[in-house]
Length: 289
Image 1: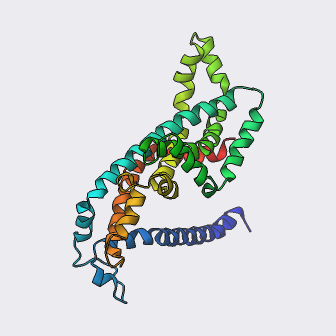
Image 2: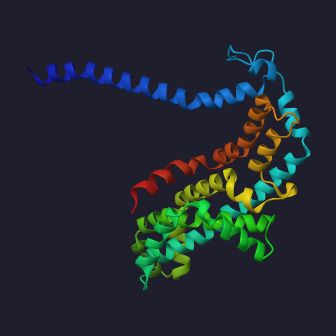
Image 3: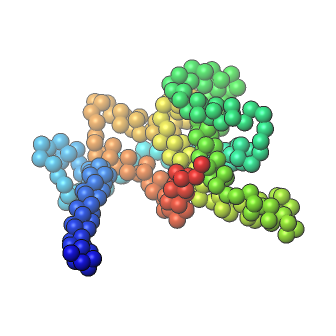
């Protein structure tokens, strides 16, 4: 059989395989997207409709009453502001601290460097629940209970180890010879780093920022321990109180879904802002050592 005939016989197989893989990818995407769709669909339906045995897949005849109930709650905007301040503070502090740490262990050789890198991995193995008592006593001792700064400190401490490990791969992936060449051309070490190396690390910084943002925005248990007053609740804590606010303790799933959708909006906005750099950053961190 000629080479042309073999190539012709393989072409239908490749097309069939590609079609099957495409169908599988579409099916997996639909399975992944269905909970999000169901949340949005339920957010427009009233309690009676949601309690029927027959599911309603399209919100025909729905309303914005569930969303109005959210914005009428006086604690929503306060919790939103607290979450935004804590999350943005955590992202900024974690990126700065982790970047300096990653730069130190990637560019410099010092005693205890291997032990420091190993400690970063070991810290990630500690269960968060095992630190609650120590964290509570520490925050109480320095007067930072029910304080935005105190919660931001705890969140930063939680995300920095993994962020250092992530950024370490990006810093190590940029050859130091680029800085040395720039220094030969007359730049100082600082100027060479800021002009040559730092722009190449932007994908890593974005990927680290995404990780820190998600961890701080969605965190619940630490906030539950150290933010005990109603006036200092973050959005996850507000959502729990909003669900349990009714006198009958009966869950209004329409309002729960509407509140969940509103809580997800800042995350969506953040992803839209950083999506250009996010994909390359996440892939790059997976292959650089």
